[in-house]
Structure formats: structure tokens, C-alpha cells
Image (cartoon, rainbow, N blue to C red):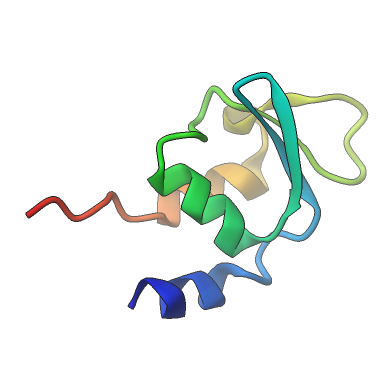
Length: 78
């Protein structure tokens, strides 16, 4: 099920980059970014950059990335 969900998000974001533990990661598609969100490595305070942006800014200030985070369900803890 996770694989299918990731495939749905793969084309949402293309070439997004994020800062994870001080390291630039990317370019990422939506599925890859969703995976980092589920791992707790990306949140609304994470710095990100996409083509067309003049500077890095937080996910909270980047509507396209913030939307994907809002659509990412929390991990299922049974």
C-alpha cells in the first residue's frame, strides 16, 4: 500500500530539494519527499528549494511542499 501511495505522489513535486541534518538532499519527487516526511526528517520548519525560487525557505513558506506534507498521513502505529 505504501508503494502505491508513493507512486501517486511521485509527479506532484519534481526537483524539490530539502536540507536534512545540514545536508542538501534532492532533487526529490513527491514520493521521495513523502518518505522523508514519514521518517520525521522533513517538517514545516525544514528548509527547501525548488526551481524558480530565489532563496531557500521553510516548507511552511512553500505552498507546494506544505500541501504535500498536509496530504501525508502519519505513520500507522499499531
